[in-house]
Image 1: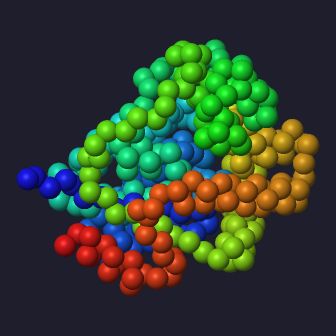
Image 2 (image 1 turned 90 degrees about the horizontal axis):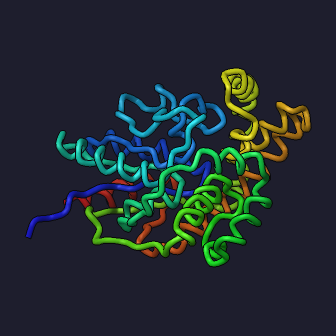
Image 3 (image 1 turned 180 degrees about the horizontal axis):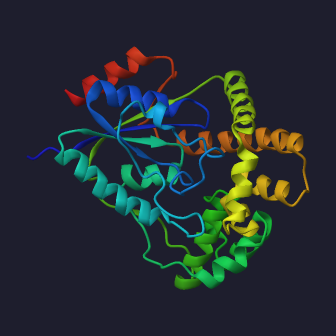
Length: 298
């Protein structure tokens, strides 16, 4: 019987050091990295999303970064389709594909081989919804499909809007279906104690402010990225829209972002802990992680 091609997934909450671990594994096991981050796919969204820098890549090839303009929408179905092609290309070079990120649904689409509904973006509907808050978008979705609200992240405008698109087209969001997995997969989860994670989040917010997050936001807005689109991108961008409208100060931005990132990290944990196949490690347990990967590949 022919064996399935192998891939590694490095996942975890925000600020757990996933990129550094993935790069180390890529260097050790001749790998290439595929980003599983729903906002790092967009061009120009660099400082706010913590996009890996050229220096941090350490010569390792990275994929699914800077794929599309932030003015356009990009669905999980598009990410899944492109990622499967990239996985095949990496295997053809006899290298190891390493998916790295914290967007749970992106990762699940590959790990569980999710069959996603083929519903094209509804530009008119998106434009109308992007001007609304997450709470208002939830109310719209509630009228269309109450069941989906039990499983969807209510604070993620992008996913909420996509669910409304699908429900508008199909009458409801269909139950997630999966097919037989195409790959043999090892999922490495990175976990930190809450106290350390909170400090990492705080430090990262401050470092991004120092790195020029406000200048980057002004440049994006001057380049035509609307404030409603900022808000639909969520987290940092929702708060950056408030900053650009002078609703909050720089200090208030940093304070509110730290809280928002912490709540996001908790939602990520609720998602990931459901998957019992994830093997959890401290980000500093490099030798143990390498041993786990070596055993998997052998």
